Image (cartoon, rainbow, N blue to C red; front, side, top):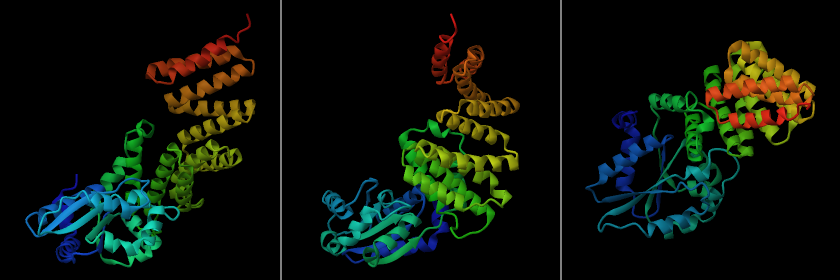
Amino acid sequence: MVPASDFLTHNQAAWQQLCTFVDFAAERLTLGFVSVNFAPDRQVILQALYDRFEHSDVQVVALDFSDPQLQFFQDALVRRLALVQRQEGRKLVLLITGLEQSIGMMGDYPPLLRDLNFVRDAFGDRVPHPLVLFLPDQALTRVARFAPDFWAWELGVFKFATLPSRVTESYQFTLESDRIREGLDLQERRQRLDLLQRLLMEYDQKSASVADRKARASIYNELGILYRGLGEVGKAEDAFRHGLQLTNSTEADLFQIRASILHAWAISKADTGEIDAAIYLYQQSLELKEQIGDIQGKAATLHELGRLKANQGDIPGAIDLYQQSLEIEEQIGNIQGKAVTLWWLGDLIAQQGDVETGIAYLEESVAIYDHLKSPHAPGVRAVLERVRRMRTP
């Protein structure tokens, strides 16, 4: 946990400039931006502003607009403003948070910014108060790019730098977390996406160092996997593409992350029915894993290639790939990987006529899943019962 005092001390100049803006902004539409990448740091600034102006002639009110579907910010702000209880004799300053959810961090022209630029001239009449918009760096860049007329009104941008300890904390919470991605509910996945996007902004986008490119590629890979799980295929593709562009096939230090991105992207291609593209990506991933000796990763890629072959109807080819994967999983002691490969392998071998061998593989898979108390056990058991019925009377 990063102490609030450390963060404000680290950003003393920006803090004093922000306080001066809030204190002296005219009582009309006056626009300032706070550049802050992480929500806990934003909350520190908000609380400090409340404390600073509590007994002054300035009334600060924070309004959150974190609906990702928001398109008409001015209308939404006017509705919220009507509910604010004004304090007589005090200047009202509105602190706006959450707009990065609808502005986005990457991709095409966001509808909110298109509307914001279009209705700019009406803003001063409908919202005659100073506004301070809290946004992460990338969202702030998108405001300047996609809503230049609105941006032209800004009278100050107050950049709050993130403490290194916050970056480390966020990296550990996302990329180094023991929490299995598939175990996250929808809200937790959205939160992780948001944190990863903010973490990405802490790295110099122009840096050519291997360490920085590796970190950014890892973040893009994780973003792609999360977007894929949420069914946002276009965003997943963009993330994988950005991650892959940070690596190349000649830098050995980046082979591991490049292989991981190729594997994850191949899964997305397979999910959308682009089988040839998926196979091509899997094969590239497999070649890199063989070069660096990543035998566990090799087993996973062989397994996925086997699944594609099976879905294409090439059962002998699928069986060969699954057997290669099984051999590696037994060698390295990957029990869970072994169980799922035995499941597929047993079913396919039985379909080829060797029912008894198929049953043996499936029984071993069931035993492993039962031992692990896995939710997959009933599914394998159902396949096993179906295969047993294939025995010749």
